[in-house]
Amino acid sequence: MIGNLPLEVMVLIGVGSPAILLALLAGTSLLNRPLPERWTGPLAAGAMLIAFAAFAIGFVVYGATRTPTLLSYGAWSASHEGGISIQFLVDRLALSFAALSAAIAGVVSAFSNRYLHRESGYNRYFVLLAMFVTGMLLVALAGNVEVLFVGWEFVGLSSALLVAFFHERPAPVANALRVFSVYRLSDAAMLSAAVLLHHIAGTDSLSMLFGGTGAAALGLTGANATIIAVLLIVAVAGKSALLPFSSWLPRAMEGPTPSSAVYYGSLSIHAGCFLLLRSGPLLEQSTFARVLAGSLGAATAIFAGITTRVQSDVKSSLAYASLTQVGIIIVEIAFGWYTIAFIHLAGHASFRLLQFLSAPNVLHDLHGMESNIGERPSPARGYLETLTSPGVRRRLFLVALERGFLDQILDRAVVTPFTGLAYKLTRLDRWLCDAVIPSRSFVATLMGEDRDDE
Image (cartoon, rainbow, N blue to C red; front, side, top):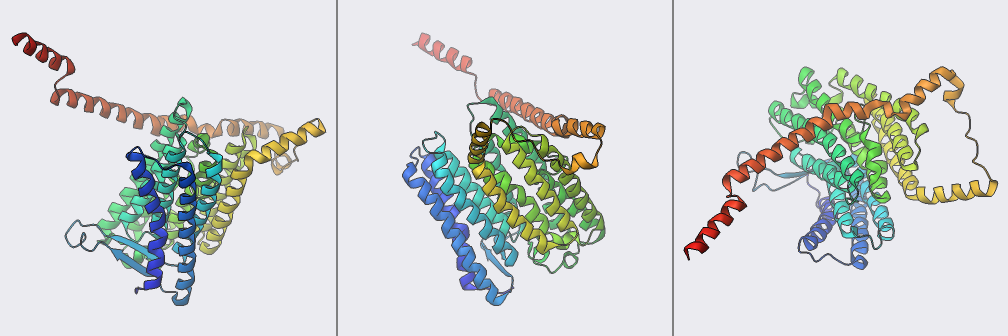
């Protein structure tokens, strides 16, 4: 891997634009001096446009050499044991996904500027959007474990906070907690895989693993490759709502429609697919991991395809329709069809973005059509009606209506233990604070005695 100055400049501009936007919007908010709407919207759209242009030019520059490039920064911090450096692995796949992320984020920024006009959380929304885009670009370009994990955390944190965007209502907050609980499990699996990778390979660099030279070069064969690959699949399942974690996806629709479009229709739900696509050389070392990924993808696609047919609101229906395609993409990756999987990912992300953003208008037009014809159009007879008996359809309807009963399973296995642990830690923290800091009554009594002495 060799250096390439024009490509390096384009990458830094592409990553730096949303990062600077995040620092600007978050900094002014912390100072209680948020930027006015007439500045925030154009700044956000402009930053995303600059990022997209930089990555598009970088893709052209990369095409002239076709040599993967590892950009490393922070050697001063990595010169000692335990130091951390920032590494970007730049190749065709990374630049393509980064450009796609920036382009979709630019469209959503322009749409959100009008959609959230005069909304009390307008500035907070764009802070979280900038955090999300920065995280997606870090995931796309990650050259070492640290950059990948920071980007992964940015994506997860901003997702959960945007689900709870309308925090004056209890339902968004409760659903955001469910999403955050599943993400914690996903992040734990990701961190475990990173620790094992560092322990076995002796390095935190992902350039050999993601760069196509093969996992065997890092000594990841047999059981080691299988364990790390399974942990990555668990991380992907949590982030991309694969079975058995699918029940949080419709609950995440509590956020604003633009955030639902960019998170659960276009980019966030595909972040796990991209990570698995990037880890193709690792999957090739483990037949078990490939079978597991393919089975999860196929089961998720079948489950989501059935469930989407009985949803009563358009956002949940679109969410499960997206999950159907995500499952198919995972199957394509498991078969080793990497080019087909990425083309499918990019096309599906763009298509779902259009569907989510136009959903309110489509509903308005549908209601107008029903009003004009005086009745609701009868649905077409589908393949399930043709291939199954009425008894089977009733059972499938019950499973789909209850969303596979996954809510109850996820509550008992993930959400309840997570919230219970958080509650116990909160009580421990309060007990420690009471033990170290004098209680208010004690201070009041002491001050009263001082006044009496005076």
